[in-house]
Image (tube, rainbow, N blue to C red; front, side, top):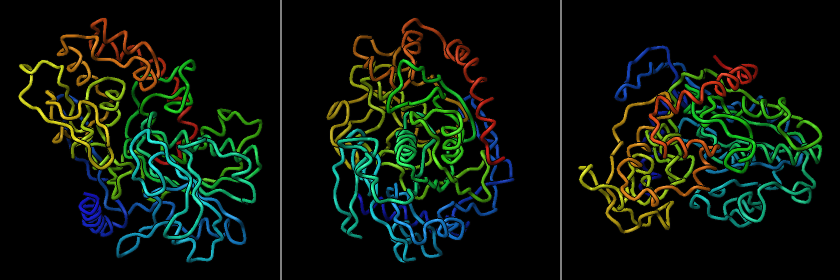
Length: 412
């Protein structure tokens, strides 16, 4: 399974390399999703990720002891494929002392929520400090001896995707220890819109540390600047922060990720649907984990079988050792051919709830609140509000956030 995934990534990457590591565009293409329509701007100018702009950041690393926050997406693209950032920098005689790894681990193989232990990277011999094990914020001892920390992780642009929480905790720890942070920017594949319920302070946690909407429409570099300048760090000082920007990318760019950002986001469709279908993580409904179509389908054994023509059976696989509804026939919908959307859609979670006869089987209340960022969404669904009515309740918070967001946008 892993070999096939790698083969698919390699074949797809060869296409991307022809476009110089990405595409963004200027040709307008109309796509629709049953009433949700977005103009997808395609461009043939090459997108250059910050990691590839080595002349911009290696002078900041030379002669220093470096820590790197990285995973399997931390790569430099080449004509023949890509090399891992750590390997590339070591070949340039950059003195890397240790690697800090986020959820899913340094090589990106751990399940969602699975604790990852510290260890040694077999390929480089470097010590790996897990930030999804004993602690999620590096300690002063773990940062001791470092002159600078380099952060390079591909984000998926959704508040409850935990890499942005890791970024914030890294920034806090480095501010406390007076260590500069360099963020290598990467495209956000969901940067073309801002939508969803806003995280409320009383529910702050690793699935949302700030008052931002579910989809915030910013690159990870832009978001790092927002964290720093809006006073969101718990540290008494700001981080000494440098963001190395992208080239030839805009928020409307269509960017295809050649490497899974995590085990259960296998392709562009899953990444685009993740903000909407990720809400199922706070329910008993399966959202494709345990199949090859993660976040491209949903279903459950307790949903009304007569309402659906589609069914599937989740089984343990790469990235999901214990999927919800394992071994059961799940009745639901296949969304694997859904066109690119430009909003958080509630129609699927409303459909699943309305077709669950015993409503007590549906919500995992604490988990749903953490993912939604508010207790109100569950109440609104249970009260029978329509998608339009629910989304109206988000608008004031969204407008407030957009004004703050506008101060930190680095790209068109």
